[in-house]
View 1 (cartoon, one colour):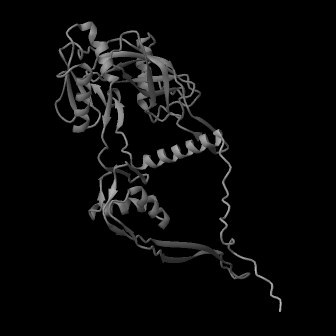
View 2 (tube, rainbow, N blue to C red):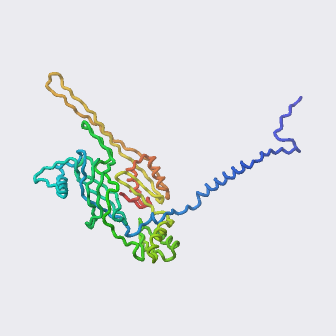
View 3 (cartoon, one colour):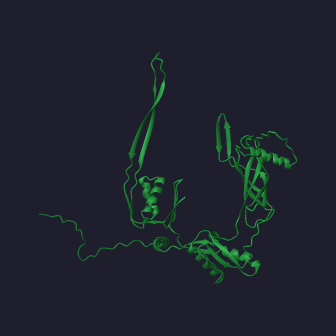
Length: 400
């Protein structure tokens, strides 16, 4: 009987298997693989490498104490309106102001004259006088109607003195009012875009009096931080001392840094310019959550974390539908048609699952989870306040 030998799965004894070698890599492929390995190493190192502190200039962190703008205001008239001014019957002071202005210009209005101009509007004029402003410089002014004028478009502001809180005149405003809105009305319909009762006069005021400022006249300059922070005050003083010498700056408290000025007066402006351009390394800010109850806005910083807690939120949904029903009387019955309404009220409770939050989780992850539950911004306000009351929200909660 002949038997056919089965093929061998292994090589015969005494013979070594032949090794297969991959073709050698060329120079371009070796370089590409080296760059890929380097990029992977850098991406992995970025996950555990300590991140540098946030840096900011002293100019963005503080301001010179005493160097501040001043608010100016005045009362004036806008003329040249196309019938959209104040109604004299409802706003009598517009007519009184117009009569007084005409008398100053030498025009006498007979007593008892009932003026009813429709192209004049009484306005309040406000402006901000910047620090170190000198006589002759121009500043922008804002014009706002205080009567019942429909629009200030196309009007001209008459010469109006602008006074400070001390009652002194510091600027004089006059010019054409620029309105950013638009409106149209026809056939009882009206469309208004933006605000028509307020406008702006670019470079409409001329400075008449300068406000003295002696911030650079003494031997010591004070820097006021924009926010109270002991770490920031210490960092600002340390940066100044490293650049200008030890003892130049001293942090007085969490908001004030005292800086010694150089003796020559002509070097103080350049000295202050160098200080404002210094970089300061800032630490992570305190954890804080800002809630706006009017708009439902929630703003949080990167330092906000949570303690271990569980969250469940359910809503009651009330639906009211009204269907009108008409009752028609029969012919010659002497009745009348009556329209009634049939209301259907349905109340449903939304069941939400409870979410368990481990300790140390970021608030951004909590917000994502609550959004997945279907929580609205108003619901989020309530949930965050409840977390704060339970001691699970490790941050300062501020409601504005």
